[in-house]
Length: 153
Image (cartoon, rainbow, N blue to C red; front, top):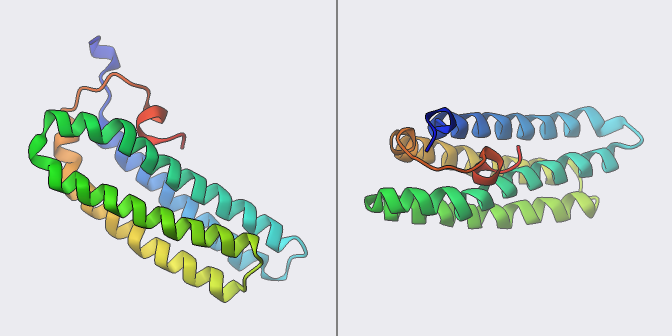
Protein backbone atom coordinates (compact mmCIF):
# COMPACT_ATOMS: atom_id res chain seq x y z
CA UNK A 1 0.00 0.00 0.00
CA UNK A 2 1.26 3.46 -0.88
CA UNK A 3 2.02 5.36 2.35
CA UNK A 4 0.22 8.42 0.96
CA UNK A 5 -3.02 6.41 0.82
CA UNK A 6 -2.90 5.30 4.44
CA UNK A 7 -6.05 6.71 5.99
CA UNK A 8 -6.36 7.50 9.69
CA UNK A 9 -9.64 5.63 10.14
CA UNK A 10 -9.99 6.68 13.76
CA UNK A 11 -10.03 10.35 12.72
CA UNK A 12 -12.38 9.66 9.82
CA UNK A 13 -14.79 7.88 12.17
CA UNK A 14 -14.75 10.82 14.58
CA UNK A 15 -15.44 13.22 11.69
CA UNK A 16 -18.32 11.04 10.51
CA UNK A 17 -19.82 11.03 14.00
CA UNK A 18 -19.45 14.82 14.23
CA UNK A 19 -21.24 15.29 10.91
CA UNK A 20 -24.05 12.97 12.00
CA UNK A 21 -24.43 14.82 15.30
CA UNK A 22 -24.66 18.07 13.31
CA UNK A 23 -27.27 16.52 11.00
CA UNK A 24 -29.38 15.56 14.02
CA UNK A 25 -29.10 19.11 15.37
CA UNK A 26 -30.05 20.56 11.96
CA UNK A 27 -33.11 18.31 11.94
CA UNK A 28 -34.04 19.46 15.45
CA UNK A 29 -33.57 23.09 14.37
CA UNK A 30 -35.79 22.55 11.33
CA UNK A 31 -38.44 21.20 13.67
CA UNK A 32 -38.09 24.19 16.02
CA UNK A 33 -37.83 26.83 13.29
CA UNK A 34 -40.54 25.40 11.11
CA UNK A 35 -43.37 25.22 13.59
CA UNK A 36 -45.08 28.28 12.10
CA UNK A 37 -43.75 28.16 8.53
CA UNK A 38 -46.21 27.23 5.75
CA UNK A 39 -43.87 24.61 4.24
CA UNK A 40 -42.65 23.32 7.59
CA UNK A 41 -43.96 19.80 7.06
CA UNK A 42 -42.29 19.31 3.70
CA UNK A 43 -39.04 20.94 4.89
CA UNK A 44 -39.01 18.76 7.97
CA UNK A 45 -39.62 15.63 5.89
CA UNK A 46 -36.58 16.57 3.80
CA UNK A 47 -34.41 17.10 6.88
CA UNK A 48 -35.63 13.85 8.45
CA UNK A 49 -35.10 11.85 5.27
CA UNK A 50 -31.67 13.40 4.81
CA UNK A 51 -30.67 12.63 8.39
CA UNK A 52 -32.12 9.11 8.21
CA UNK A 53 -30.32 8.43 4.94
CA UNK A 54 -27.01 9.74 6.27
CA UNK A 55 -27.09 7.71 9.50
CA UNK A 56 -28.39 4.58 7.77
CA UNK A 57 -25.77 4.93 5.03
CA UNK A 58 -23.00 5.33 7.60
CA UNK A 59 -24.04 2.18 9.44
CA UNK A 60 -24.54 0.10 6.29
CA UNK A 61 -21.07 1.11 5.10
CA UNK A 62 -19.53 0.20 8.45
CA UNK A 63 -21.28 -3.19 8.39
CA UNK A 64 -20.14 -3.96 4.83
CA UNK A 65 -16.62 -2.53 4.75
CA UNK A 66 -15.19 -1.33 8.05
CA UNK A 67 -16.31 -4.06 10.44
CA UNK A 68 -15.23 -7.03 8.28
CA UNK A 69 -11.76 -5.49 7.88
CA UNK A 70 -11.56 -4.72 11.60
CA UNK A 71 -12.77 -8.21 12.53
CA UNK A 72 -10.14 -9.75 10.25
CA UNK A 73 -7.27 -7.81 11.85
CA UNK A 74 -8.69 -7.97 15.40
CA UNK A 75 -10.76 -11.13 15.91
CA UNK A 76 -10.81 -10.39 19.65
CA UNK A 77 -13.24 -7.55 18.86
CA UNK A 78 -15.90 -9.96 17.59
CA UNK A 79 -18.34 -9.39 20.46
CA UNK A 80 -17.87 -5.61 20.30
CA UNK A 81 -18.53 -5.60 16.56
CA UNK A 82 -21.60 -7.81 17.04
CA UNK A 83 -22.94 -5.32 19.60
CA UNK A 84 -22.28 -2.39 17.26
CA UNK A 85 -24.09 -4.17 14.43
CA UNK A 86 -27.01 -4.89 16.76
CA UNK A 87 -27.17 -1.17 17.55
CA UNK A 88 -27.22 -0.45 13.81
CA UNK A 89 -30.23 -2.71 13.41
CA UNK A 90 -32.07 -1.00 16.29
CA UNK A 91 -31.26 2.45 14.91
CA UNK A 92 -32.47 1.43 11.44
CA UNK A 93 -35.81 0.50 12.99
CA UNK A 94 -36.02 3.83 14.86
CA UNK A 95 -35.05 5.77 11.72
CA UNK A 96 -37.78 3.99 9.76
CA UNK A 97 -40.30 5.02 12.41
CA UNK A 98 -39.09 8.65 12.26
CA UNK A 99 -39.33 8.69 8.50
CA UNK A 100 -42.88 7.31 8.59
CA UNK A 101 -43.84 9.84 11.28
CA UNK A 102 -42.45 12.75 9.27
CA UNK A 103 -44.03 11.59 6.01
CA UNK A 104 -47.29 10.88 7.81
CA UNK A 105 -47.52 14.39 9.20
CA UNK A 106 -47.31 13.44 12.88
CA UNK A 107 -47.28 16.23 15.45
CA UNK A 108 -44.20 18.22 16.37
CA UNK A 109 -44.23 16.57 19.82
CA UNK A 110 -44.29 13.10 18.29
CA UNK A 111 -41.41 13.97 15.98
CA UNK A 112 -39.44 15.37 18.92
CA UNK A 113 -39.93 12.10 20.79
CA UNK A 114 -38.61 10.17 17.78
CA UNK A 115 -35.59 12.48 17.54
CA UNK A 116 -34.96 12.24 21.29
CA UNK A 117 -34.96 8.44 21.18
CA UNK A 118 -32.72 8.29 18.12
CA UNK A 119 -30.40 10.92 19.59
CA UNK A 120 -30.00 9.03 22.85
CA UNK A 121 -29.30 5.68 21.19
CA UNK A 122 -27.07 7.27 18.54
CA UNK A 123 -24.95 9.08 21.14
CA UNK A 124 -24.61 5.98 23.32
CA UNK A 125 -23.64 3.96 20.24
CA UNK A 126 -21.08 6.52 19.05
CA UNK A 127 -19.44 6.74 22.48
CA UNK A 128 -19.26 2.96 22.85
CA UNK A 129 -17.88 2.61 19.34
CA UNK A 130 -15.25 5.29 19.92
CA UNK A 131 -14.19 3.77 23.27
CA UNK A 132 -13.94 0.27 21.90
CA UNK A 133 -12.53 0.56 18.39
CA UNK A 134 -10.68 3.88 17.91
CA UNK A 135 -7.33 2.46 19.03
CA UNK A 136 -7.50 -0.54 16.66
CA UNK A 137 -8.68 1.77 13.86
CA UNK A 138 -5.52 3.86 14.19
CA UNK A 139 -3.50 0.96 12.80
CA UNK A 140 -6.10 -0.40 10.38
CA UNK A 141 -4.81 -0.80 6.83
CA UNK A 142 -7.82 -0.61 4.57
CA UNK A 143 -7.27 0.58 1.02
CA UNK A 144 -10.76 1.87 0.23
CA UNK A 145 -12.37 5.25 -0.22
CA UNK A 146 -13.74 6.94 2.89
CA UNK A 147 -17.36 7.16 1.58
CA UNK A 148 -17.31 3.43 0.85
CA UNK A 149 -16.21 2.63 4.40
CA UNK A 150 -18.06 5.29 6.43
CA UNK A 151 -20.88 6.32 4.14
CA UNK A 152 -21.34 9.30 1.84
CA UNK A 153 -21.39 11.99 4.49
